[in-house]
Image 1 (tube, rainbow, N blue to C red):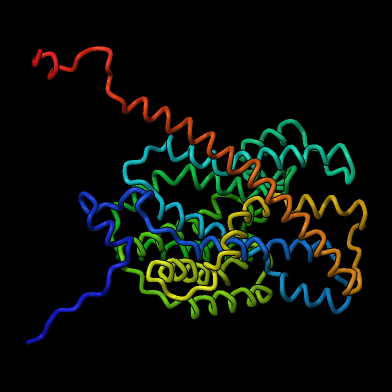
Image 2 (cartoon, rainbow, N blue to C red):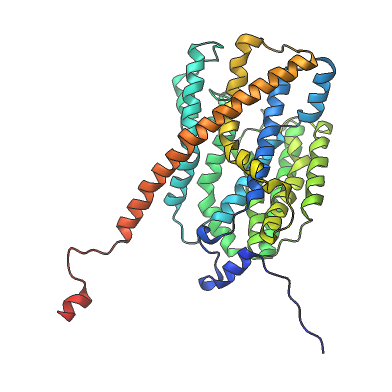
Length: 394
């Protein structure tokens, strides 16, 4: 006699199976995925390295090493886009309303964005005298629509172009989440494949100059990476992810990263890394769910991951401020360049800690507390008049 065997369920799948109707339970009951937070820090570090490379701190052999290590650092933003889709799908609430979701996203990103916009605006009036935007450009940056116009994409805090892309993703997510809830494992896998194909097609069109201008900062062009993240998260939630393990996925992601110099700069570089990132993120999630070894969930990496958004938003402003003392493209020798980079990194990390502890966390708590209070008031029974049942009892 043979006995049927079934694969062990992840905690997410078990929770979903016990929820009413088999739906994904509220995010409060979903297991945490600390490895994804640790990986987020590594992506932020890649972007930091890219900007150190772009400002030419290192000359000679040091410059060549930095180019080799961080010349493809822009791919860290692609990682953020895929990760964002995965995390939002993982934490989505089954009966959530669009307005509630959007308010939580505003509470998550907007306070730090407004502070860095204010810092960047101050820097236009003081050394290093950053380019001063027009009123329309500044307002577009504040409301995170500036990336839709290529000449405006690096207004004020230049890295906020990716936040404008995220704002577009957030706007689309409630409709996308509705679609995902109707998709089974096969449909989610097809959606992931279509997303990868869309990246390949867009990269092909840009490399052949079919667009009048680069599309790497255009929000609609980056949507497939976000959708890819949502589809892989759905597969993990359904306990149907069958990708390689964490070590193999990391190896594929690293190989893709170092293939970037072999393709046309800009959006086409995404084709080298998107599959590796789409494998690495769910692999890290599955490792957390099953308690498998993961370097990325170490406490210090997770803490740095918590600071990564603030670090990402402030580090380029620190580098730009440094041009007042260092000049542009200083090309220092190796010892001096390492010392300067260490100082810039330390200042950026210290400011990110201040932003996280003094702005991001308290502002988010304050904004969400008001949202929860309003929801509680709507849910509370009306005690001003007796209910029909109590009136009948009296």
